[in-house]
Image 1 (cartoon, helix red, strand yellow):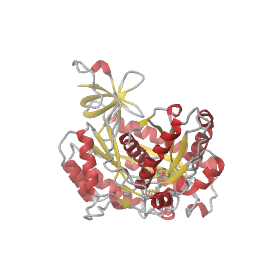
Image 2 (spheres, helix red, strand yellow):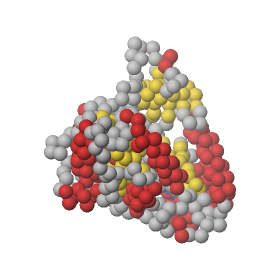
Image 3 (cartoon, helix red, strand yellow):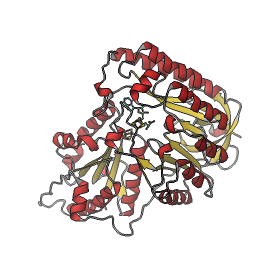
Image 4 (cartoon, helix red, strand yellow):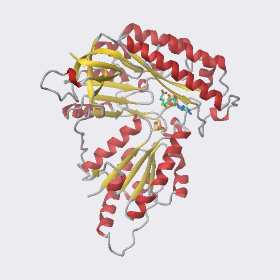
Length: 464
Ligand code: SAH
Ligand code: SF4
Ligand code: F3S
């Protein structure tokens, strides 16, 4: 039996791909290992979004040498976004890499390759202890190889879920992949390729089977979910959401990300129509509050248009939580430009923001732009923004104190508290002493709680 370990870097799109592959491999009889030392095959799913992400990845791959020495039949594959453009570098730097498969390619080709690969690893495992040398695999172009050898996904192959006890049953599903927006700082269109939506029928079937398996939270993913378009019927994202909301069962649906330029009233109205299922949480990446920077980022909206979308959200979904992504120190960002970003933070009062220092990326237009802003200044701006965001988060959390809300419980934390989230994605620490009934097992359940205290990162609550 082959044991596979997945090391996954990057965003939920990568998590979704790794989970899909893990389920497929379980269906082929593999075991999904908890750590590298148990594995016969290590799959590294890579992220190219910022330079730091790549550095982390390279130091991880370097550390694998120890495992390779002890296990000559061990195979290592690099998949995901970095493999789309740096596979050659990987093969040159780490001779033990056996295959690479970029995120731009059709995942079905990788599945066909894997079915063949695990048969090879099985037969190599039989040779352990003998003197027969293992054949070195170096598969640099899997798509070509799969076509040439006519490799196929085994007929009737199934996908097998494996839910860990004591954890929320959550499902992450890519409804589309790639991006056509070409924001000037972003490598995603180059490493994930053009936008491609998956068939609505297939997505709906998958969601149904996940709900039947006890999944309580469905996460629909795309770089811009509002560009979703069913390749068969032309149905849009709002239509897909409505169809999912009409499915039987008690479950929550979340989605990310919504590009502000395409966030439509139609989408918000569908969310308002099914509040029991469609979580009132919108992740709306701002990136910058300066019109000049937004223009040079090619975000195709102004700060005013961004605020207009926020107004729509507040009108149609008054209880909605809004979170965002912000880039600090885009080439040529002035103090004034930065202040404009802070202004939007003050106006919108995001519940949460993910902020990053701009990182120049290969192929992107911004990497060619002149940048007279020092790293030190960028770091100071980031620290200031993050400090202010913490205070704003605290304010948004303060407003919840005394309210009774529904949460979905995810797991037990090391301090014995239950970790849960509201529909609005607000993190909640639930005190176990507050559970009076015999049913102390509240993980993976919806419960009503009363918020008793607010902190920057989360709120504290008791079960009512
Ligand atoms: N498609 C999503 C973004 C995915 S990338 C969207 O448009 O919202 C996640 C976040 O990483 C981006 O929102 C951006 O804030 C950040 N990011 C992307 N490229 C970056 C770069 N070169 N430097 C710093 N941050 C970057
Ligand atoms: Fe990158 Fe922009 Fe596409 Fe988001 S919308 S993935 S930031 S190019
Ligand atoms: Fe990273 Fe690729 Fe996601 S570059 S952020 S893993 S789409």
